[in-house]
Length: 319
Image (cartoon, rainbow, N blue to C red; front, side, top):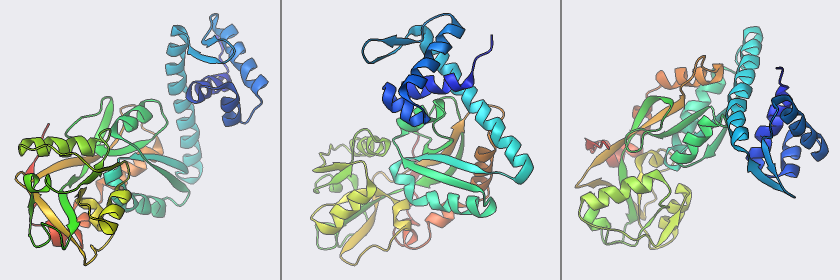
């Protein structure tokens, strides 16, 4: 049997978009062309892959299995094309990176040397939860992820630790802890807090640390954006527990304080992750090589992170 990979692309787009017209636009074809391609695929296979009514109703059980194969086949074809091009003129293309919000501040430390070493390579960076990163890797929508390695390990991936995340309290200088040199989780639980949303792994880690200190917290402001946390602390009465890597981006304003968190003082391993498959795509290999040769731990301990937490690396947290 000979299967047209274009029809597999139509199937993948349809399942991703879950709408015939949107899938056709994503593929750059008309809706009748996409629908005809799906029907040709079904004729080639000898069974229906799409449940149809007036609108897209999902895949059949057989279609779901074909969809999983289609994702892998298209990824392999794309990888082969990229490798052939690289053999001619060096690595080229766009690396797709998913990063948990607390790691976004360090992504440039990886992408900058990557693009300097390989001028024909670009990168697309999206902020995602750890669960979304895992799904994106397995559905071949991401090439690499930057996420937590300790607490909720991902499955079916290879991982490279790149730094340890530490936690600091960002709080007003004229607030209850403004004159302190460190903050306990129990003390912080009494403050008006803005934190990441519960679907974010960072929030689940923080909730566990608060629980370990014997307290519970209710966040007055919740968001999936670390920059929104910082804006609320800067402009209002709020405090927030933040990953120290974000202090790499800015000097803490004079009317704010960044205090290391203690009792417990914990760290969590952050790492680069990519799908466990051979051969590894060339762009993925290029990023892994860059990460292996960088000392992100030292870079993130430079001013101002070092001013607040270099001496408070704490204990390693394992889940």
